[in-house]
Image 1: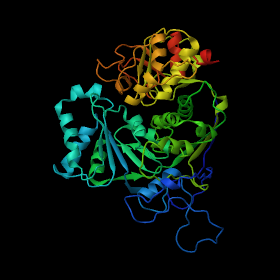
Image 2 (image 1 turned 90 degrees about the vertical axis):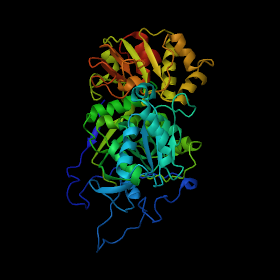
Image 3 (image 1 turned 120 degrees about the vertical axis):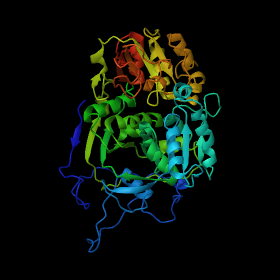
Image 4 (image 1 turned 180 degrees about the horizontal axis):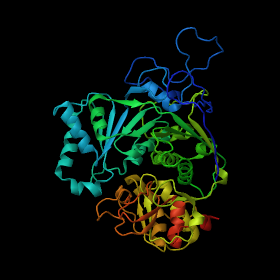
Length: 506
């Protein structure tokens, strides 16, 4: 499907005044008066949204202020500045730091080394530690890993360090990127940093969210700040009614195929349009999740009534949504008519090797994997169950199901699938001949040790709802991974070939 792109001829480099970029974004306001408050890290009044003003004469002193994008506004607020432009380096106050069982121990180790064994986390922000890979890495990490996490709470002066424990503990949550949203740590207008590249998932909430390294995380633990460069923004406008055979995974595969895996390198990817507004929060998370697969610094979607409704029972922390100004400057704008889009896959071995699912119908597969932070949410499993229910057939290849979090796992076993007569996803999966849904985790998505559940230990062909298909990503370096939506993955499981889901949904 073709898209239109408008690329300004000027560059963000050089003079910081208005350099003639096209303005595309329309500012939208949403009532959220009960949720607005001053930021807790500063008592200064900071301009968050450029106010509507009457026409005025040109300024005779100082620079002329220009409109800002959502990402620029979040940076401005977090650095306590009124105006920023792409390319500026600023110290940003961090609202939430997330780390997990793989990167947490070295990050905490760096914090202790640089700030002292008895140093305390004195900055008022929330640090969330999750264990998404616990079934993979902990048995190999040894007792030092547990020791580091066990001691970490003693380094906190505030009740702002949340540790979601091991699988045997009722506080165990699962894959960090989904658990963060479910536990209310994704809030509009805030800054969330995490020691994992797919932290950008949280941009679905109108939040600046990006991945950082362990050294940076150790510094954030000790100071509550990080030096970041303001990224320029690419704007993706998606309009048109979403066909009932498409999911958000098809949208992001379309975009990555359009701009390549390097097309958004250190750029913000802002997703807007009527199609985006119609998406649920979980689908928006899928869209933002793979911004990093295009090289993006972050993906971001304006908060709206859907966002606020999702957060109602998730958090009591006040938040302040921001929206791009009408005069905001974008590096490039891309437009898509989603009503004309067909189901897609990304062929091995890159997320930008976009192809129509129907064009790959002769590709024989050995297995299907449904799970991870981009394809293991409740709605993803509901979509799979919908295809199985419509077909009434059994799968022809091993089909592995790995919920992203403990909550999703419970939903799979308890929530009735619409139109099923009261059957749950787990019952439909059992009737279709799938493997029993496994415990939550990142396992096979990132290719853990050989005994990891559903890992590819042979050079097989797999259709997967995960987010990367590089050589060795799910295990065997000669394995071939076709990235697809849950609809396409389910349809492929039923035929044993890469299959367009319209074969069962129409």
